[in-house]
Image (cartoon, rainbow, N blue to C red; front, side, top):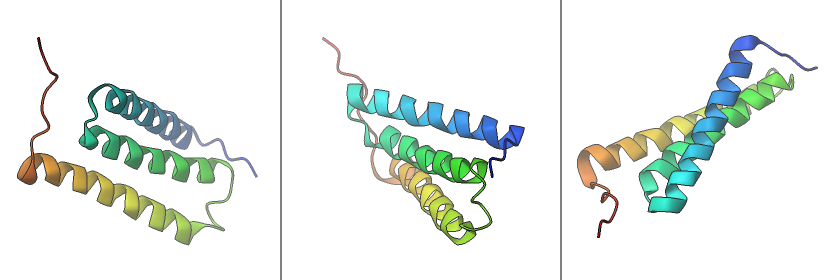
Length: 93
């Protein structure tokens, strides 16, 4: 059964926007950090969609796994920024 909880609807659309922005920026810069963050928010969008479609109770285990993978993806991207590498800025000239 469709569940149009306003908070979940807003979260779904905001996560979709971040996914799209990550894909657009990756296409321009090939920055793996932004594609990781975009992909993570794509997973969050998927979990919100499952909830909106009314399958959250039936797929609660799947939702936990999706969200854990999404959070781990963001952590991986942030660790890359903080400790391992700095993505080059845009090329000039």
